[in-house]
Image 1 (cartoon, rainbow, N blue to C red):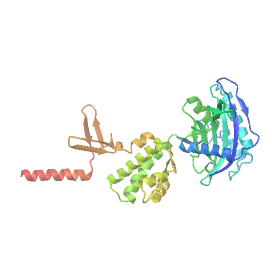
Image 2: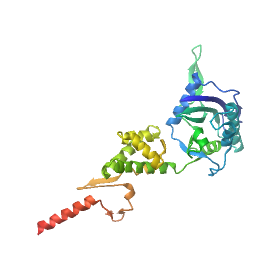
Image 3: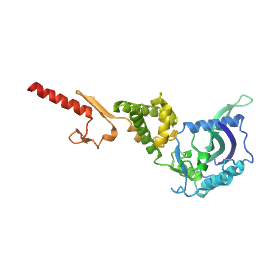
Image 4: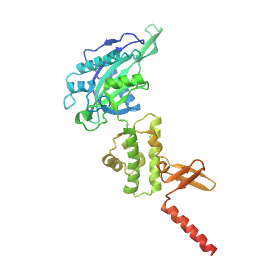
Length: 348
């Protein structure tokens, strides 16, 4: 991880309805010392936050170029070198202020705008975060207890990370990771500032594809039967749920290592090439739920089937409380027919 540029500007107000104050720094901050601790903290927040995924666009049109993207084109060359990081970020800070003022967002307080460019996994990234100060307590040189303010770095409220390399090379439409908050006003204004739009189907599509990739690899490549393949899907489900609980990102290589530890690289390669799955997976909770079978047992009966079979080959009559199977596994059918035949022979 290499930090190339860092700069902090301020566009904020202390109370709702107050006039915004703006202070733009004339030169970049140092990339070492406390500044490095700051950027390391922000990078950690990004890695732990639940982020939306998307691309640049205006009103759903990914062919339209928002102001933020226009500025990137003005200042970055094809190798992701910035002609003037100071001037770029000043222009973006002015744009940030213009949106808050122009849209009359009197309750948006703004904050410290931290821009930083870094290299990760041979890709260049541009990070931007809106950080606020939080009240604390300190001790003065005279050992008096005094009020203090520090940057609030324990939670990412508003931020975006743009993969400049993928954006420049047009390798994917998933080059922006962003966090916009839950409140509609905060979400809308920050997405307008970045000019990003969500890939709304990404999570659903990737969660479906991950399940298919696991099932196909287990059965077709590893020669596992349906039951073992289902167990692999369940392992993936449980692993992803644990990652979500701790707020950690779900990575394809980690899923591969957990589900297919002996053939993890082979599975990850197949998942990327044949199922178009990225390393950073977007997970849809509803689709993830389908990884788990519907099952129940009692009174000498045990039933289990994939959730997608419900209302297709498995019908449930709510009024009669009856379950009807229009298809059953060959092994079960053969066992039933054999049992019935043996009963007929006994009777004869």
